[in-house]
Length: 544
Image (cartoon, rainbow, N blue to C red):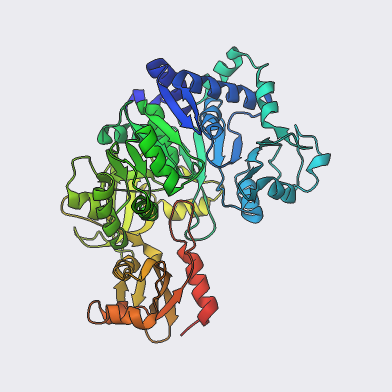
């Protein structure tokens, strides 16, 4: 690893960008625009405010906020003063946000008051019932022993809480000398972010990463050919690493312009692509499908797009990936996890159509991959699927305050056991098949839910589909399908069987089908299959 990379620190990036791109536009949000110089000034203003309210080096700062410019300023300001950002899922509610703030041992909790119908302030009050009687500069809660202060964004001051403007005003007294001293004290090996897993498999874990993530982003900027002439739509949730890395961090390192949205909205995204001449968008298959549908209803000029990042490789994603090539722009496929950092593998801009739609990317520099038989631990031959193992400089430093979970995930040789089913192709590309625990074992036969889902989605009656296993006394488990019907259409078990019989193996055909209005999703568009597995047990009992 070169010394140049070792010296890179996240909090230094805005100042470096300001020197390089100064008056170029860095950010657009709801009619407001910031140059790189103005962006850097706002980061320093927030950093001074954090110092003023008592945030110390290595302290954890929990951030519960939908996409806002202030999210970006906090992202770099916490890093600049040596604090650790803990982004909180904005779909958390009273109980799960309390778990994350407590488990992360956050000393500062920054929250917006509300967003649309969601009243975050009410949930804060519920978790901190007597806060109005507390010293807002030094909270004392048995339930949250590390918590010392709450900062409220977007409303007037609340008793026991600091208002955002109070934080900024307090920072006016912090000298440039003190700010620079805090920045100088930061070590590139320090933890800079604790990002909680998305919750597709149950209780989230806090994944720790250091400033070394910068190297991975620089490698990807070069692979994708991103420059200051690019315009990136930032419309996925910032608390998720996909947007944090591929929009916010990539823009700062490349000089590209960000067009930020509070949240994903297909119509508004298309309007902004046209108005701001965006060149890069990100998303999963659910996002692109929404974009297709909106574009059909009211066509927008999307000719400025030059690439769309779209993790592909699963059977269920290939058709939409192909459609994206025609409707929008060539896709960049990739694979990554919270624990490995995003796009630990990615295709190239000149990869073939097949590689971009049916594979999950070529390893990024500095990454090693193995695919093993999870039973024996032996390496699988090229083209044969098994559990994916990854070793790299970006592998998580561990799960925060979970040493046993960390030891289970990362072996003594540094290999991270992903729990993903994958294969390595003859051309060196990775192909993600699905989560290992999502794979079904039907009468001794392996069944990929993604394969069955892809086949169900060929039916015009079905808009979305998800397949999970249901326990069976004879076959161990059988497929159960959850479907969201297409508008004005109807699908039932007889129609599904008629579509499948003679076309796919009988053991792959769903034995149970449930029609639902929507599927439970993470904020980034991944189906929460642990919820579906629980639901099918509630509907049918413990065993068929």
